[in-house]
Length: 348
Image (spheres, helix red, strand yellow):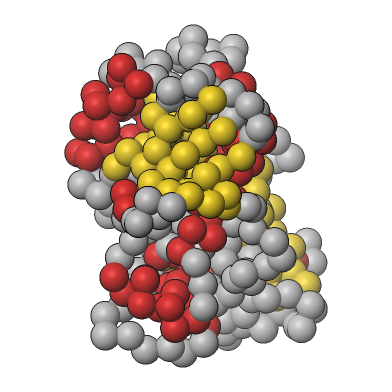
């Protein structure tokens, strides 16, 4: 699987003539057709992409997953990724959490008048590369332009279709007592990477986002025959909020061990300075899995092939109450709640 793009690195539009997005680029006329024909179609054309109103898809299974999401991150570029790669990976990961094999994405842009074509081209290249890494195809899309001051550079919406080729039911209702909770890696890097760049904070080392696709790892787990009960990617609200959502949906009491939750030292330090709790910081390339106790070690070994920091952080204690209990490093316990309010704005 190659991470290399196979198209020209030079923007095909005459940016010396039109260095920025104009309202006319969304007006349905010559400039809009030029943008689509010269910039988008050559990049995403793969035999499926169509200019018509709908794409016709050939699916090998009658059981599919379908999802949609919008991305409004500010700033558009951050260490470890940008709004383009995040839009692809975010939708791919949502499909993976349903146990689906992602196949096709739609791609819609809302561009702000005045956005530079150089910036837009960098985003397009990143989307292309991320789709190749994730092994999905962009098959349809849309472009709109809003007046200057009424957007935030670029907003992106992606919808995704994937097929389900197994008989597992992967959702919170499948969670059982004694299920083990596996975390796929360290937490907190995405939110802190965004905040550090936005607030011009300088640390000894650059904190990079964990932005990455999760579908290949999930497929390995499924193909290994592990009886996965539930999967969930850890995005807005962080680990604490996601665990609470699942606990409530499954009527389960969960106990997690603080000492087993991996957090980079740089992230810990940044959280101490900013007054944040890593448990509530957003991620873009991490997920949790609920696995039967007797299959936990087998599953963990697969996780660790992808990320050595993957670890078992706790278990489902009993099927009642719908709450999450954190046991700290000293052995004392407390109930952790969902995030209240907004800790970090515009992180995905």
